[in-house]
Length: 289
Ligand SMILES: Cc1ncc(C[n+]2csc(CCOP(=O)(O)OP(=O)(O)O)c2C)c(N)n1
Ligand code: SF4
Image 1 (cartoon, rainbow, N blue to C red):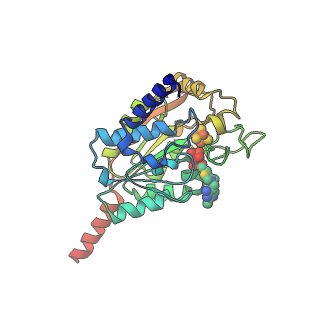
Image 2: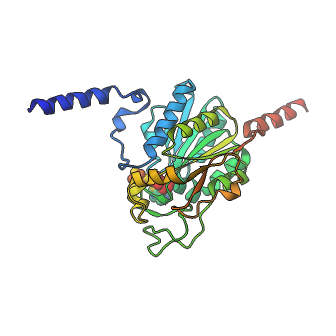
Image 3: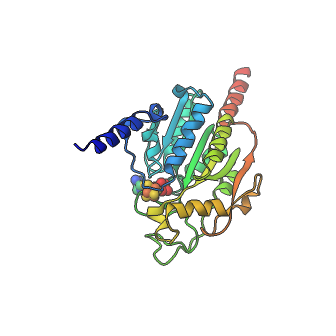
């Protein structure tokens, strides 16, 4: 074999063997399925680094995903992780937390999984203030199944199921979650990895139902059909058009146009009785009777 090729192969092997996050990934599941330029990897990295920096015991971490490209996150993570059925990560995560309150439960899933088929579960989890962090990769589409429209697809956008443009108004996810009762609500993008990581770390330290929306490019399923250019163009769009506005009124953070300025930041950070605390309060009242 050509010596140069051998050297390159050796170096690649060395780099592959020494990736700093190796011990947090299930090597037998790699290489991952994500397309070049997809934002799913940034979300995964920000989450792992948050766990490392907060020195959270990996044995106390549980990650749950539904089905979708981002749903693969649970399968790649070497924590107690569960790749559940489409739309059902929230009930699964609820069961884990209620059965073992010591677990740090995080759901990582997509806009379709969480707000279309799983929409009912997420609003009731927020209403109950179940102790979990939900990280939603919002790429405005069903990436895994080829780019159908989702509840976050902007009006007029083209998808395989809206070939003439979408006529439905999308959900404003931070507003929906705040109205349903979430105690921490933030939005970042997959480009802003440090801000995203800081937000995940902050949310991991809070109680109650915490929700972080991460705007993520899907160049393959959404970008191409809407002439948004390459993933680099989307990153540049994020860079040029995001407006950081902490404590913004969530009614004003809707994403109507994928080419306009958009608001990111932390919008809600409050404390209120969680589901398990409420259960304990009722239980102790019963015991006293
Ligand atoms: C019950 C059921 N219905 C439909 C599907 C097909 N399906 C798989 S993933 C998916 C949508 C995923 O979209 P999203 O959650 O936004 O994740 P993304 O792939 O964009 O990351 C659908 C409809 C399925 N797997 N199971
Ligand atoms: S189809 Fe879209 S969401 Fe799925 S891996 Fe590719 S870029 Fe990412």
